Each structure stands twice: as structure tokens, then as C-alpha cells.
Length: 569
Ligand code: GLC
Image (tube, rainbow, N blue to C red):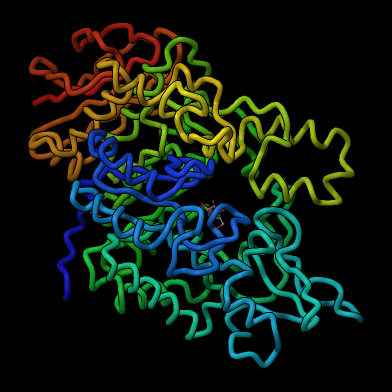
């Protein structure tokens, strides 16, 4: 039955679950679907209204589920389709929608399509992927110079047919050929399958890469250090991408009350609008990455960042999409180190204040906020002491490259980079309690490390303390249902104050005579603050604050990480 598009995501707060690390119900050390089911009351209490579930499909786990071998079934370690059905029913009965990860730029090399494709040049599945002859007299050099996002060539030679196949990620993640209409049909069918089972949308993995201008060499990056850039111009926002997404939207997505959010690393505002302008009917929203890139060079080497730059990025996106499309608001996900420390500097004893300040800085912007598992209790980066403790395929690939091994002190350098940048920081086990393994599993050990701070930072403790970060988040998320605040969050215009201020982020949202004033001190020090002179503040009403005791609004010195929101007339 045809469903009416309600654009429900504009009032939603989405919670991301990385299932492998969320909760283990059967004692094998790996998170699973029944573990999620056991935590649905917790999610409901937090108040979130949608879940983005990282991949839970059948997968040999070369990249923890981002390499799918069967799009219509559940990963054995995670449970069964029946469990999944119980999970989605449990979500829906609690008013929580479900967004599934849609990983269709590539499959696993263990997917039946690839097995067929690799078996012979005349196989009907051959053109589901990109196969090419190698260069050089014996064809032993890759067809072009494109590099994989995980390092090394983007091509792997296959003995069976003596040709090379393309993989923009790991060699166990061959890229699908979207120029083949049968591939597009398969993707449409997969979407329909899950939508008919009741899912409410998709987070579209690396969606900007699906259309490729195949084969020309990429220009080498001029002087810029980036391990994974060559060829970008031929596969990012490729020649047919808008046509393919528009068709998927018209043929499938538009018939359901669903939402899409596309992962779009490197996207500019103009490009973001090309994907999400409502009139174009492609995706609903994208994840832009500009603010994720301010503290590194070439997406890898850590560097210092400055608050005016972060504010200018937020502000450009706020103004750029206003009235045309819709932002996604986030600091964390499974590919990013934790935000605490990263965006706050050393917070010392002010764990709560720093975490609450960060949340305030984004949740009042226009867009859909995403909370990554553990962010609501202030989980932090893991103190990695060795590369051997890391699981990420990216780290393993870099370490296996001959050129890397030739660098002096290679492991020591990589460890110092990864201690700041590793995706593994976000994948440590969810901290449920101060029991062994943080209550994540009853096995002797979980599949991955647990942060030693779990005895202090855990859900049990947070739930038992009315002043905890959990209850701060609960209140913050609850504002999306507040009759007065929600309309301002949804429709209010955005205005930045003091753009050059290096410590404070100050902005307003205004809607039909109501004004929200948002003030955030990003630093672990006292900072003087003056209420902007065009704001009358005699009828100020406090909405939320990062301090438990709040001083009245006025010109005064802000405490370290003090952040607050006032509603004004
Ligand atoms: C996306 C995912 C990431 C994965 C990659 C390849 O960036 O978020 O975790 O490694 O795609 O699928």
C-alpha cells in the first residue's frame, strides 16, 4: 500500500548501534540482535525515536559487516531473521523507527554474485563487477593507478581468469558495477525487501562512489599527503550518480514513508544539495564530513584545530541547506574517534560538563541529531598501547604494505597517529555496568577490548544518578517533543554571533517571534561573555545547561565548558 511521506526524520533523534559491540545475549563475546532487544527499554527511556543499525547482514566480517555476502539474511553470530523481526516489532511498539545500513557500493567477495563473476569471463554475473586486463606486457600491473581507501592499489589480480577486479576498500570488498542495469535492479529489490519487512529507511554507505568513470588514471595528489586519494575524481560523484539515485527514489523509496541519509565524505554544500534538494528526489539527507576533517591532514595525520573554523563549517551548512534540504548533526559514529577530548581538549574532572557542552553545540542546530552508542554516557577513547590491540581492517592493511614496512619506526609512528585517529576507539565494548567486561557479555572475554574506565563510566551508574549525563541527554532529546521548543528547532533560522571568538560558540535560532540563544564555552577555562546587544534578555527562560546549577543570563564570566540555552521573546 502506498504510504504518505511525512518527513518524520525532521523531528527525530537517531541512535546508532554498532551491533558487534552493543550487547551480547548468548555469551559468545559478540554483540547480537537479542542483545539489542534486551536494551530496547533503555533506548526508549533515553527518548530516541529512531535507530541506525550498522550492518547486521550475513558477512565474513573482513570489515565488520561492511562486506555483505547475503543481503537478505542476518549474520550468523547476530542471530536469525526471526530475531530481527522481533527486534523491529519491539522498536515500532516503542515508537522507535529503524534505519538499516545499505552497503551497495561493494559486496563481500564471498557473495554468490562475486563467486559467479570470478568463475569465468562468460558468466552472466561477470559484469556485476569491474574486471579488467592488467597493464604491462604480461598484464601483471594493475589496470590503473587508483588507490584503495584502505591503502594500496584498488585492484587485485585473480588467477582464475587472469584479470583484475576493482575494490575501493579491502580486496574482500569488490565494487559493484552500477552501470549494469541488472545491478541497479538487484539494489532496488533489496531495498523493497527490507521496506516491505517494515524498515523506515537506509543509511547509504559510501554512496558518492557508486558511479564510476572507469579506467582513466587519476591525477596524483599534488604535494598533499593522503594515503588514499588517487582516482577520486573518477569515482566520487561519478557521471551517472544522480540519475541512479533519482531512479531508485522514484521506483522504490518514494512509495514508502522512509528516509535516506547518504554517507558523503568530502561533499561540498553545492554537491550536498545536488543529492538532497527536495525537488530533485534523490536522497533525503547526507552526512557531510567537513567538521570531521578539521583535526587531521589528509584525513590521517592529527593536527591542531581552531574553533572559528568549526563554527564557520557548521554555519555554512546551516545557512546553505536552510529551506532547501536538511542537515545531519553528529560528532561520533563507528568510523570516528570519540568526541570527548577530540573537540574539548583535556577536560580533566569536567567529564559531564564537557560532554553536555558538545551535545548542546550541535543538537540546537537545524537537522537530525545522531547519538552514537555510549555517547550518552560519555564514553571515551581507548588507551591503546600497541597496534596489535587494534582490529580495524584499515590498520591491518596499512601494516601489511611493503612500503610501510620500509619506513623507519613505522609501527611507533602509526601507533601515535592511531591513538588519536583510530576507528577502533568507537568500537570498544559498550559499557553497561561495572561487572566484568563492562556487563557486555558473560563470556570470559568479549570480541574486542573494553575501556578500563568502565567502572566509572557505565550505564548502570548513569541510570542510578539523577544528575548523570544520561539524564541530561534524556532531557535534551525530550525537547524535540516539546510544543514550544520543537517548532523552533525544526523551522527556526540560524544566526551566528562572534564568528572569530576562539573559545565561544554563540548562535540563535528564531521562529515566529520566539528565540533560542545557544552559548557554548568550548574551553577548560573561564571565558568572559557578553550577551549580543541586539538580544533583549529580560524574559529569559532557561531551556538546558551543561552545569547543574545555573546562573542567570547576563554579561558574566562563563565557567569551563559552560553551555546553556535560553528561550527569549
Ligand atoms: C563506510 C563505513 C565504514 C566502512 C566503509 C567501507 O565508510 O562507514 O565503516 O569501512 O564504508 O564499507
